[in-house]
Length: 368
Ligand code: OSB
Ligand code: MG
Image (tube, helix red, strand yellow):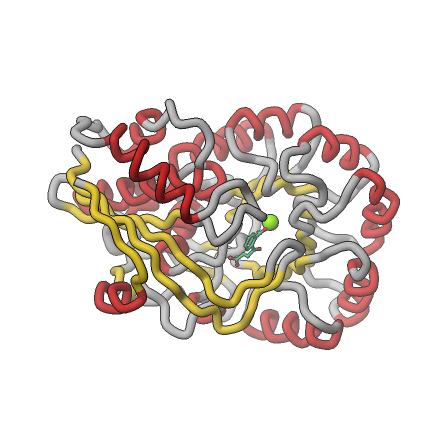
């Protein structure tokens, strides 16, 4: 297989409601889509970088530069046995996993379409019904938070994650536990706490959280191991895990008991499979995180989540939770039991809506 042509494209999509984390509040999402042509088939991927380097180091601008000036030259004219070789073909490029993931996942989609098979099967997926959770952004009041949780539970979602930041976490968890004593509840701090906050984080133990996601700094695996020693509640790492080596280090020193997998943060399906396999061997469950993706990224998340060790509910939800109109056909839907069934159509299993995508495009560049 050879990649003949790449189309880089930025689209703008407005979220149905603003999404707030400890580092950001977004309503207008800039989305970077990558389309490849390989042996006559078309494949789509999403590079999940955004406006700013406040989640991880990349932005749309850096990802565009890396794909155009380094990833594409590394792939151009190269005979690939399979999409599984793209990750290693890009091996000279250090970091920039969202850029790599954008193009790598697109090649996987193209290969699955060439083989007329669903991508999830090509990846070795086995799970036919995926449990879904929701990620609820920071709200302006506790009443609003309670109402948001109520709505998601009524829709069937199987676990609730709330975003926290220092100062309101205890009161919010208290309020939610009073109202919903038995739900599967977890928190995500997006690195908002420091070593001085260990006593505060220990107070979260009484809420019986499923896990505390990424409490400490994005590059500080070691301090998470120190914190985990003081906690019964499992720590789940998100921002800290950019590679197989990070995952191994985190597991071996006891920095986490669970890993959040994101295709962008780890660099695509091959990197995710390798981390998945290591976690499986070590008895560490994984789940699929989200980056407010369009339907393209969502479809790839679904495919990845069919791997056997994705045993916990992911942040993969219905298109309509985020978008009035998604860029794929059909949209992603969730059953009343809070599950998603992987599609049976070839490739990512959803068709990109070209006309809509064209209409939403603010910039485009073709590489050939
Ligand atoms: O930390 O998981 C995160 C969104 C943007 C950046 C980081 C995160 C998130 C989410 C949203 O939690 C998950 C989703 O897409 O539903
Ligand atoms: Mg997170």
